[in-house]
Length: 231
Image (cartoon, rainbow, N blue to C red; front, side, top):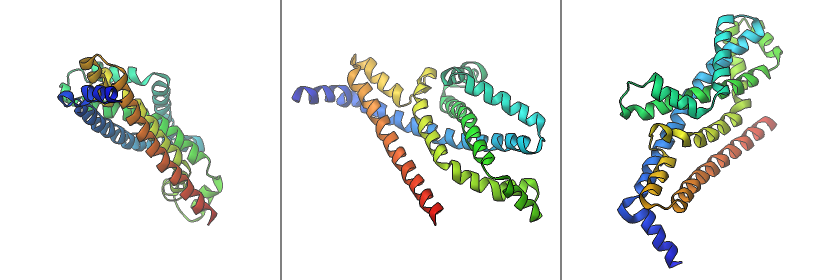
């Protein structure tokens, strides 16, 4: 036991190496929740364009652009998108903007998956809801905004919350552009101590704890929605 404690101190306490994990965790959370916000906004926009085209036949150009976006983003690895964004598109930016590039990259990627989640929610709403809106004198856009989207959002909210969990774990590849996220923090400690077990175990444990917390919150959200539906 004393050997384990000594190894723990040598790995994390010596030279305050634990700060790499703290800094990395902070960057990971910033990237995750900022990218999630971008993804939700972008996803809702794409979903509305695609569902409008499916229901009315309008917005053909917008639907075509959205389909290309979805095909490219969902058909290529996240790490490749991140590297293209940093080393090609934003190659001239100072390294201080790594976190912004990471947020934008993960946000665009998440938006593609959010779009399909929201679109499925919109398409699941009965067409009678659109007819009800029309009978009330509402335009298609107002019917979508005031009647359809609130119902669709309620239906897909658990799936959106799960997308945030997936996004949290996906940010572990941010180190490919030199971003000091949680995984990179553990890798720095490993490089300094020449010990892989302790740093990687710590990183895995932190991710696991965050996922457990988020999963618990999603579970509570689903139960609350289920209770509201029964009323």
